[in-house]
Amino acid sequence: MGKKEETGGVSLWERLERPAAAPRTSLSPGRIAEAAIGIADRDGFGAVTMRKIAAELGVAPMAAYRHVDGKDELWALMVDRVSAELEPGTEPDREEPPGWRETLRAHARRTRASILRHPWLVQLPAPLFAVTPTRLAAAERQLAVLTGLGLGADTAMAAFRTVSSYVHGATQSEVSLRAYMKEQGWESGDETRRGLAPQMSYLLGTGRYPAYLAYTRTAARKDDAEWTFETGLECVLDGVAGLVERGGE
Image 1 (tube, rainbow, N blue to C red):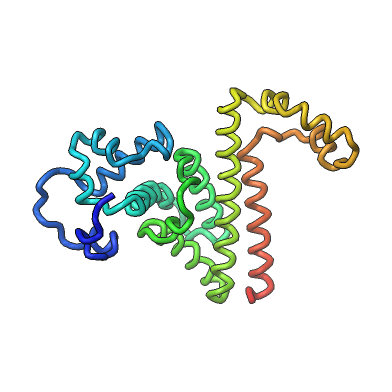
Image 2 (image 1 turned 30 degrees about the vertical axis):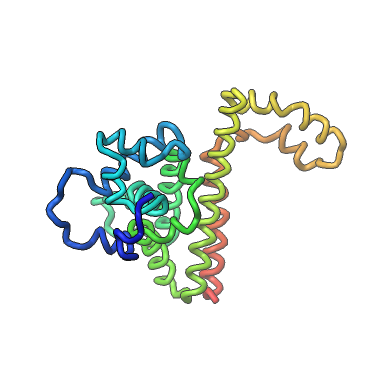
């Protein structure tokens, strides 16, 4: 995609912040990103090509190449556009700013919701999550509230990354399970368990996994993904709270 000489090696974000020349067409990086997101949401990440984007926008493929220099820039634009969903909402009735725990919890919930709306996000290269303006703004909010607790720079970053790793890992597992169920034609947790029963019945019948066997017989929230996510999140936040109480170093 594209030619490096057309951009002179200048960062995508620097180019976008430069004063724009008079446009020859209404095409823009923003419109390209919106079209790409629409395709990915509808048909999956693998369906996103510059040819399909151009067809969606009613332009020639080469017209899009003038705005996006390669697939990495296209992915970055998509991530940056979607990351606007991570912006905190306005809460005019709040008299005091939220505490650190509420800030991190709210961001975690917004992140999960965004990934579930756009499951193709879990297929993107991980570095993209750290190098777009909107992504960095989200990280900045989390780091600011953690360093405000008196944590050192390294400790605050470790805590931030731990919460982020939990959120992305847990939600990726949720997305993967949904995709697997769809592939198998299973529409519920009960259907999934019936489908996996031959393997599970044998393994649990060996007597080597008593704790897991007890879970299968007594758990009441096997299919409550939101409760599971929230409970795991509280475990992680409890760990950050303990770090804060110990002085953070």
